[in-house]
Image 1 (cartoon, rainbow, N blue to C red):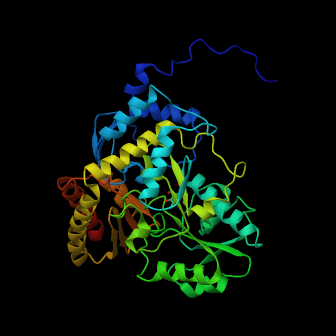
Image 2 (cartoon, rainbow, N blue to C red):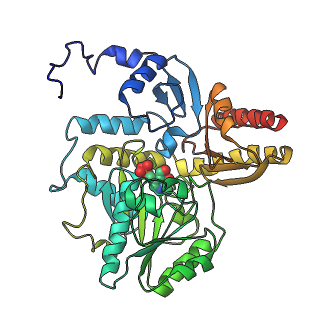
Image 3 (cartoon, rainbow, N blue to C red):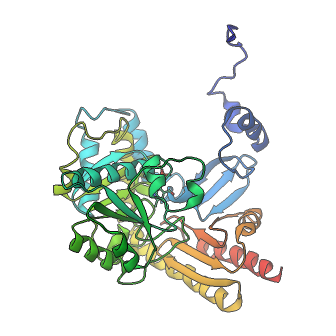
Length: 416
Ligand SMILES: Cc1ncc(COP(=O)(O)O)c(C=O)c1O
């Protein structure tokens, strides 16, 4: 029998000031009771941030070289984004897509003028992938085409089509059956793509630089080769730029690094300076297949996210952050290239803009905890790759500070 007991009057107020001032441990206890434990979390509760620094509930400061898993592309509390959200929130928070808003039109114009085509807005990376996959199939359906080729070590998100597109068996375990129609080519191998194309194939889907897969940067000519296969075979080329968009690589979009334009592109993560947002960009003649009723997202394109996105673009432009990305990327490279000559455990260094991978011959996971103990936050992916996605506005002093700690930790790990 379900309980009919009235709720206790002792339910804590959600806006109680004590919530914000609780210790990390008190918050961890609350999570244990009420939050589904589907994430491995560090035993720290973060309470505020500024630029590349973030503070925990005990007042400890960390230099974050992986802020918001790439979402905080301008670091924490970027001033123009904060002000834009504060201003917008007093006028319109949410408006359904049955209406027009200035903000959605302006942000669509801002990103399409820096890329191409037309935009559809949603709220996350996986949602953007779902939209792109549906659009590719809508385009292909009149020709009986629905199959999509993706690549090993890719990562496209956790919803069903996105996780099926993600060619890593560990993400498929226990959740089958998956979405039909996906096949997996070898990253970097054009022949493996050609071998998978048949008359039912509608698209090739790839991250221009694989992020979660270990900062895998394509050899020159690979993306152009995919473009050629797509053109020769009558397929769409879809770039997942969830991680590489918004100046992350030093150009507005990753594809501009190689000057290979896709037909459809997905965005999320840093698109709105840390506010939840995603987008699909499509060439106008392909976008036309997304007719009313074919796809939608209730919160997609809400004025709050759009205002944050506009402020993000304004900040990148006015603060010349694409130039800063080039300069700070070079600075990181100098530090780590020197370290690579010193430490044989560094197998490979893969850097493009503010995407940095240090591939080790040993398990890199312990480096995350050791750096955190010294006040620097990093990530390790695929066991051996130290991954950094620093904010575009990181300073030279912060690059030096972070590189010094990582170098010290890797030296210690080399020594065993
Ligand atoms: C390239 C890429 N695509 C899609 C996703 C999924 O994004 P989200 O977690 O916002 O659904 C990610 C997330 O890491 C990603 O890196």
